[in-house]
Amino acid sequence: MWVGTSTDIQEIKQMDQQKDYFISVASHELKTPITSIKGYVQMLSIMYDKSEDTFLKTSLTAVDRQILKLTTLISDLLDISKIKSGSLPLSKEDFEIKSVIKDCIDEIEHINPAYKIIYHSKDNLTLYADRERIGQVFINFLTNAVKYSPGKSEVIIESFKQENNIVVMVKDSGIGISKKDQQKIFERFYRVEGKSEKTFPGFGIGLFIVAEIIQRHNGKIGVESEPGKGSSFYFS
Ligand code: ADP
Image (cartoon, rainbow, N blue to C red; front, top):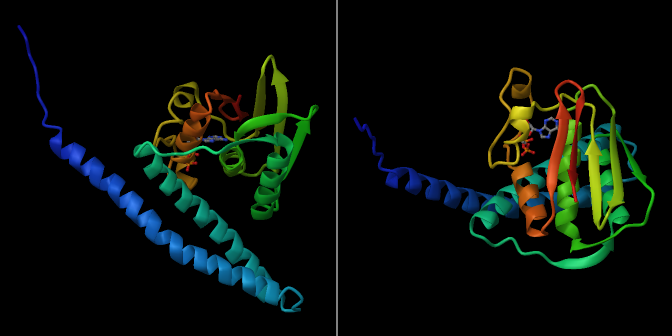
């Protein structure tokens, strides 16, 4: 006996298209006011740099940090739209990987002053890639390393040469990821389900974007992790 089912997926497809369209328009519309707010906050920070008013200064720093988080989120949403429409252009150049890593460490330590990011590198490694996009990969790895290691205060970055490849690894000693989830976290909107995971904010798009960036460079991306012990995210 043969048994079959058929589902009309036309409606699901249309809803998916509407969702992508909404993400694209919403992220574009959000970008303009945020850019303007960012400019004013930077001006205020410069104007009151020498002020004795500690409340004013800590408030401006806090607003600045939150704006940085918001801008990253909006750029991620824009990238999702670009990936979906097949237009994530790369602009490649030669650059020292150390310089990008140092910039990213400064940015992450500025947003998370309680964390120390330690960087080990033996050699001077030059990469031919899109500098800004590679920076985006580090920022994502580092943001996650900090976010998913509550109560800890250290993240380690290593970069080294392996045969003809450059490998960069970001290690944390946080909550870790089970084998089952390790295979799925690079998918769009995938977030690990669990009692403790619910407390971490996020959309589940960061790793999808960085995987796409590395893939577009013909590179490899991956993770080694043990629940309760920590994770090491790497690309080559
Ligand atoms: P988000 O963090 O916004 O949810 P990501 O795409 O960056 O989105 O990550 C997808 C999922 O992978 C996260 O929801 C989290 O469950 C898991 N994850 C990513 N990085 C880490 C890490 N360093 N330690 C533990 N889990 C992680």
